[in-house]
Image (cartoon, rainbow, N blue to C red; front, side):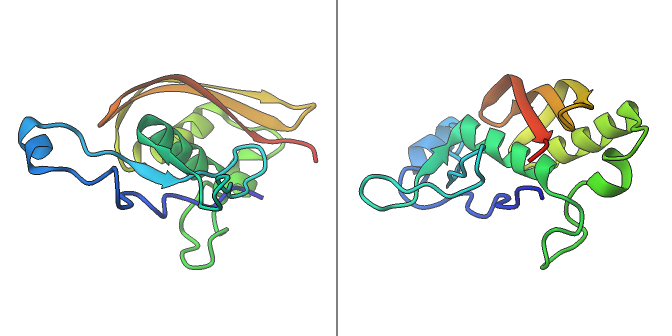
Length: 154
């Protein structure tokens, strides 16, 4: 299954509040989200028992990973969200150009992403994984050469 913690908590209180001076100076608003362990998909608690948070470029990177890893129909509240993993990607003879187009659309659809400057995707048939590396421009700066892996034999 995919990973659906997708972007539920952008703009949580505290450090992400923009002051009038920051707004006037054009300082971008901070992006925060609940941290989801990329290996396990589990929420992480801090030593004090609070939910761990991720901020700024790392929060956008996490949202991208979640958007790409969400399977079409996975979220019961809106089954139109997600990529068609079973229908178009995890098929016998996958079309890399079509897969790259799907991943591109998912990435640029993430809040805070302005555009995608590069994307490379490769399949490892033995491990049943798709690894993609991208560089994206965001409201908070450049996410350069980020690599994520989707799938895998479990």
